[in-house]
Length: 171
Length: 263
Image (cartoon, rainbow over all chains, first blue to last red; front, side, top):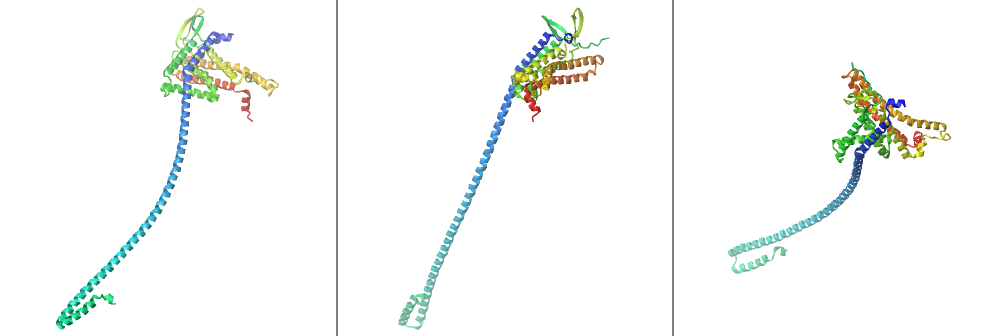
C-alpha cells in the first residue's frame, strides 16, 4: 500500500474522477454527440433519398428519351411515307394535268385550223364573188361596145349562169 | 538562489469540502469540465440548424471525424454508436487536459499551505493527467466498459470461453495457458493504460519545469510544441487502444480464429 500512498492513489478521489468523467460524458452525449449524430443521420438519409430521386429521375429521363427517340423515329417514318405518297399523288396529278393541257392544246389547234379553213373558204368565196362581178362589169363594158342589147342580155344571162355556179362545184 | 522544485508524483491538496480533499488536479478537471459544458451548451443554443453556422459546422466536423475514426476500427455501426460517447469523451477530455497543462500559470502559480504543521509550496493548477487517480479512473472506465460491452454483445459464456479453455479441448493445454495469459492481460492492460498516460504527461511536466528552470527564455518553446504533440498522441493512443480492446471484446473467439485461419 506504500506505492498507493506514494502515487497519491486515493479511493474517494478516484471515485470523484470517475464521477467527473461520467458527468462530462453524459453532458457531451446529451448536448453534442446525440444531436449531431442524429443530424448527420438525418442529413445522410436526406442525401440518400435525394440520390435515389436523382437515380429515379435519371431512369425516367432515359426512358423518356428512349420513348421520344422511338416516337421521333415513328414520326419520321410516317413523314417519309406521307412524302412518298404525296410525291406519287403529285406525279399522278402532274400527268393528269399534262394530259388535260395537251388535249386542250390539241383542241385549240383543231379549232384554229377549222377557223382558218372557214376563213379561207369565206375569202375564196369573196374573191370569187369580186372576180365574177369584175368579169361581168368588164364583159358588160366590152359588150356595150361590140354587141346589141339582145345579144348582151343573152350573153349576160349565160355568163351569170356560169358564174353563179361555183368553180369548185363545176369541177 | 532559487531551487529546482520538480513536481511530486502525488497531486497536492489545495483545500477540503467537508472531509473530501480538493486537489490541484481536481481543480483542473473541473475547469476542463466547465469549458466542455460551456461549449456543449453554446452549441445546444444554436438549436442545431439544418444549415450549420461556423461553430456548429466545426463541431459537426469534429464529431463526425471521431465517429468515422471509431467506426473504421470497430467496423460495426451499432457497436460504434454504443462505444462512441465513451471513446470520444476520453479523447476530448484527455486532449483538453493535456493541452491545458501547458497553459501559462499551470504549474507556475504557486500557493503555500500548511501540511502537517509544515508550510508547503505547490502549484495551484496541475495537469489533470499528471495524477494517477485520473488516469486510473479513465483506465477503469475503459476496461470495465470493454468487458461489459463484450459480455452484452457476444454473451457471457462465449466471452468467458476466451479466458477459460478446458485443457481437453483443442488446442488443449496451449489454449488453457493462452486463456490464462489473456485473463492476466486484462489486468495488465489496466496498469499499462494508467501508467502510459500518467508517465507521458508527468514526464512532460517535469521536462518543462527543468527546461524553464535552466533556460527560461526561447528554449522551452520547442518543448511546449512537443508537449502539444504528445498531448494529441496520448489522447489518440488511449482512445485507439480502447477501441481496439472493444473490437477484440465484441469479436467472438471462434469468429476471430476463423478470421485468422480462413482455410
